[in-house]
Length: 120
Image (cartoon, rainbow, N blue to C red; front, side, top):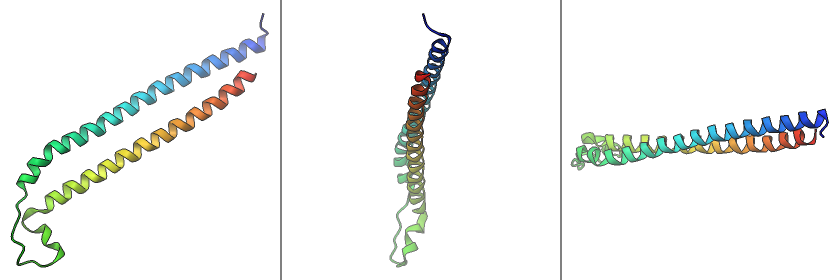
């Protein structure tokens, strides 16, 4: 038969385990949603890119011998779209890496808490 302290310690351990499982399930759903959103964004942009590239008109740059000639005749749209896509991809990767790091820290803290509660 267990003592009162052993029952309390076991209850705390079970509560910590259930909370950890709930957090893990929530984090998994969040990560899957973020990955799906990133993929949808990239696929949507890649499907829209041929239409955008077809609308870009190439002009004769013989009159313009400067670096800004790439923006003549509406060619700037392609550069703007590519810049925005690169920025969005960087943001998505940064957010995913941050979430992975946060999940790793939480798992480490959960293991420490489980060791403490298990020793009670």
